[in-house]
Image (cartoon, rainbow, N blue to C red; front, side, top):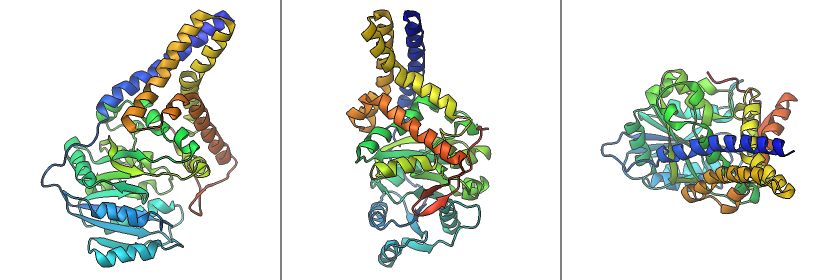
Length: 383
């Protein structure tokens, strides 16, 4: 047992070190967007909306309060059965910058959101497109600063992760792991230095891109079947030879992604098979996360109970390495402290969502969201 414990402790130190080192490097280069430049191009802000009566007025108010750039705002009503269309039309009547579009039914093979985004892009008149979700709220300089980052990064597409507003306990436990998984396992420097699709990453809540590159990459038609535009849209750009980039949008935008534990579980599961839960990836991610983020705590508890203090010291080091990125996330991204300290439980819950989603996919059970069935095509290995 002592030899086994020491071996497991060494493995946990190694795996926790990998995540901690990559995270520490990334937080130094994953920066907020710069201060706005002058003479920025006009922007078409595109908002797909389905049953968003509780969100649509607030997002439009935040966008229309933007400063530093000219803009149009096109909102696509995607077959809402609430007051969403009426609210959009009331804004369009008061402000000429707002346009209302009624989205046609998606053709066979199209995911609803991707079809709505494609229709909106086809109507946009400006050379820079900004897609945002209806549950996002922008600061006044968010569009100008994001456009400046797009310009200065010399890329075709940029994406930012907004500050995540958290309510229920499961939101607080799971959603901060978005930053952890992104920054602990994606080498941002390498992503920026190449166009390899394997390094594609983004956040579907906030995208900005050059319109000519969007069309050259196939637009949303290139990802028509997907639920996971956060990965698949940047990948489509990279397949077409364009570079993409990420920035920290914590101070530019806020988003309440899900409300309540049930929405969190189903929301994360709906596109899991196109991300971590893809058959080619889930084994690798399960090993990395369990070995580096859960095993240290288990080994430490067993070693202390058995009085194996050499193994306990190694496991304690692994625990510190595991918690370091999460504690930095508390400071940098304003995440709950208790969620960081509950890292092993959050990782177990996250993997449970992934395996549950994969099992349902293998059983042929489609995901559903906002009253629509969403058949999932599992993602293969990145090119």
